Length: 201
Image (tube, rainbow, N blue to C red; front, side, top):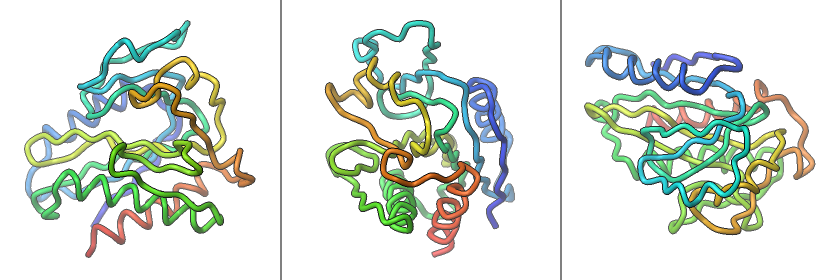
């Protein structure tokens, strides 16, 4: 069974530390969890993140995170789902998990008549070559944390001040710009459903 927690709007560092603690404390019997959350505006740099991709971040804080990937931006109106999974128990590799999360976002967007794809050269989900969903994972003691972010109805302008995910000129989009107006709470339902269904296979 996968426990689903809705954390609401939270500070990035607070949730990040909670994920680390949860992963450190869990054992073979600990249930997997999905955490649904939104963050106050923040840029996060992954373990491979290069500061040269931060172009002009202004007053928005920059956090050096321990997830994979480069630089991204989080803010209210973006759906974030953190996947705290026992990878060994699920017999999952990192690439399999990334593909599972990409597919969960693609399947969800299809429900709203948005055609999205994943790209082998750049993890994440794209609509008309614009990025709508990102993935960053960390594995520790055969367990995963961090997860996915899906742009729903947020101010996208701060993405202009970074090379999103390390790609110069990569544009971003969101459901609101594609004619879909729904709350994060509503959007979270099909995404979490797709993830939990895939994990049961």
